[in-house]
Image 1 (cartoon, one colour):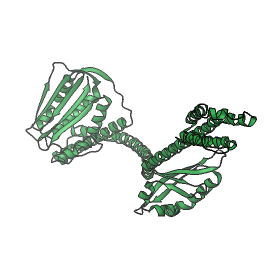
Image 2 (spheres, helix red, strand yellow):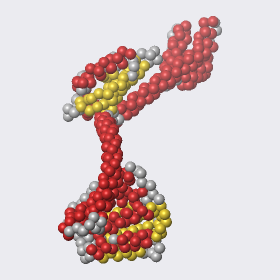
Image 3 (cartoon, helix red, strand yellow):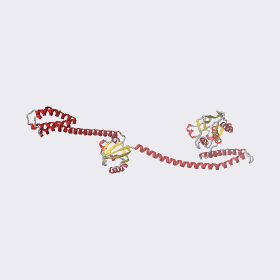
Image 4 (cartoon, one colour):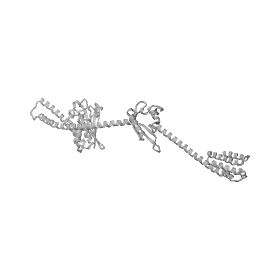
Length: 487
């Protein structure tokens, strides 16, 4: 449109009376203005199109008029101006315009990307659970995410007032400020654990870190940092440290107890050996007197000696129990395994104790589930274990009741069960039954007596055979001891 306006203006001038000498100057100015306008607003391509219109018009419309003029140097220059200079000028101005447009568009795109990047970083900072902040090179806060205000309860203006030292625990603030000022001075990264006051007045441990961002000349542009709540971690580490100290103390106490226990076992072993010898001697001499080797004795004397003999017998049993327990606790037990028929062993034990069952008016039954029940065991120790359990079943079972022993082989296991109809054991005491020196109160415990070591020792022997011993019991209905051994 500006080109057509310019051409129209030239046409009017060409056919209007005026000075011919000024005509080309006016035409040149009009064309120049039009071309520059088109080039600046529409670019190189549109400017060249405008120049093309001008040239066509010149040769079609103004050519007769220009031909009538004299072709001197001045007129030739004017024609060259219209036909050559203007197109070149249009190209140059259009090129500049396009270059400027490109640079402006590039700058606009760069600004848009920078704004998007800033918005993305701000979104990330405000979405993170950590408290994010930035400061000027001198350490003045210029950005902090909302987590700061949520934690401290302060307003935006209060937070930006650089009064953060007031939020730090009094015990931490001096060292905190000194480290921060050192980092500001040297540019070294800042890292410090300190306590920040929460909006409810509680101080919680935080790990604050900050690093300096430098420009191309190495100067600090900005400090970027974060504060992470590590109070739960610190508490856990403190509990762990306390637990480690407690564990170390308990380990030390355990070692001391083991040493004391070892010393105790040594003492019991030594004392038992020293006691068994005279006790055995007393038993022999009292037995000889009872049998008449020292002459006739009265009935009263016999009663006293019989009581002494039985007391001495109980003493020897306790001494033997102590020696057996001391030996097994010291790890000095060695098993000599042989293959035997467990049925024969149980029958032999019942036969030996038959007089006791008769005296107590008890019935004992043995029911083997197979004709032969073979197992590889230490015969002497397993015999003592079974004797102990069967004797206990008899001791804690009232007169007129029945004791039943069963044995069977199941796959690769041997299972022996001893069931009685005795006083039973309370469930709360089941866990104590295999403990050392354990005595469970029941209606027959005073009459029975004992060292409280028999079942402890029996379990140790079964453990050495890689077996188990368990108990099921009900008050006033009886108990069942079940031994399981590898067959």
